[in-house]
Length: 364
Image 1 (cartoon, rainbow, N blue to C red):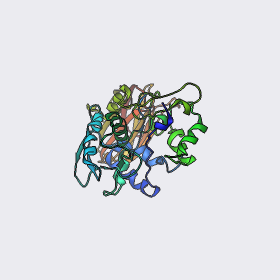
Image 2: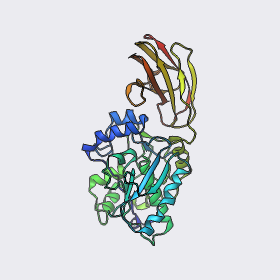
Image 3: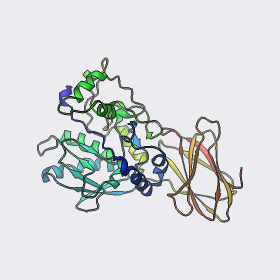
Image 4: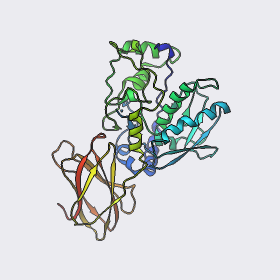
């Protein structure tokens, strides 16, 4: 494979002035976004910037969502070739793409820019409705289906909050950086050194991505020609969802959702299991009298615990994790009467295991 053949997408980052608004919109869309959006910057605001495909936490759509898609411009023949490849994700994720002319469409596609790109997940909600959230710069009526499959599936992965696989914390690519700089800093890309670093070499923090072993077959991975690496290392064009892509997106947007479990104050601890990578368990508890309450987990599994309420599942009250402390996640809080919501997930995106959870009156 020759470097001359490489067409890649670039990370589309929200301007700094929109990031606070984007965080609020992301939490309103999906309360599970709250922790990471609230406390960590968006990629590109600072130089932070999967196998499993890596998903940027804090930008996930609500599970079961129908995302409306509208074309802002472009050749009708090209437009008609886009939907089948977008729908590939919906075979495995509990997300539907509805193509039409809705002026309030969450995803808006243009063909005016020379590059191909998409905003990540819920970042699209902060883009003005007359502006694109996704662009295809080199697709034409006579472009082969294989290229449509590669590019469209990739960009709709970004729209679901997937980041580039080569920027996964698990990626260990033996880059020849000088060769990469020479290529991408020249025509037709003409990137700056900082842009090369941001789009290729920087890896996301382990605290803000869900990932596991590096997936060389992921649709979210760039092609990597041999001349870009040290030694004999090369990755060809990935044109379809990999088995890992399929299994992981099905976990992040599951078609079968675990039911919310009721917790009763001062009852025996509830036994639970995180059985799949990325799974989140949901609990609900009614508090009758104001006072101090303790929400306590138990067992050997490292879990992350979040408490929301009262009477809504979007206002974060407190959170705790037990990673590396030989303790169990616990929240002690003053709570008024009302209904409260508790989320539990494994501390590591690829972790599974058993745990217990209980809520007790008083400080424990």
